[in-house]
Length: 216
Figure (tube, rainbow, N blue to C red):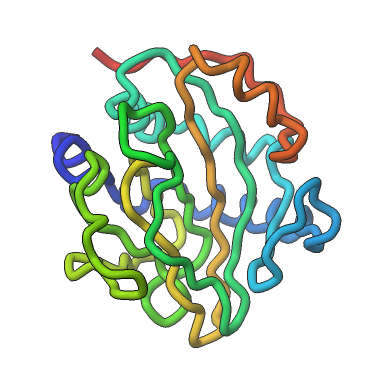
């Protein structure tokens, strides 16, 4: 857990069971929606899936290891603010390094990727730059990859927990192999009213009233 503080991310290996992964894959495939079906159209080089009402999704989003890691970064009561499925299509998925949290500052949101297939450089594995959640790492010229960028590799059932301020981005799915994942957000409970204003735009259907306390 100490690495979360210094690196801004932690890859929890083999965390979701085989049975859980199978249930999550089924939820993803059943919930896939075309770009125009979302409140805000999604990029066409990605598949997106509505999954936030599925009990199997809720179960994995509440795994003790995940909640403990999110609480470690947030350090205050928090809630599960959203979860959806994402998969880069063949030849697509590339993202420039970015921060989900916008400008660096106190951690308000933790992002969690639950991997449902093997992932790595060939099929658009997630890229991260350790330690950049505190504001470093924006000095490279536009279009030049950060020299400390690492592309993560692993298997279905791994779960990546990272500070939303961390520089990260998906790679390009060169091989065309499936790389389904669930992207969940855990946000400070004090921001509940702000989250409610964008609920429909984010296609959030689930209840978000359960509050989790960070571990001591």
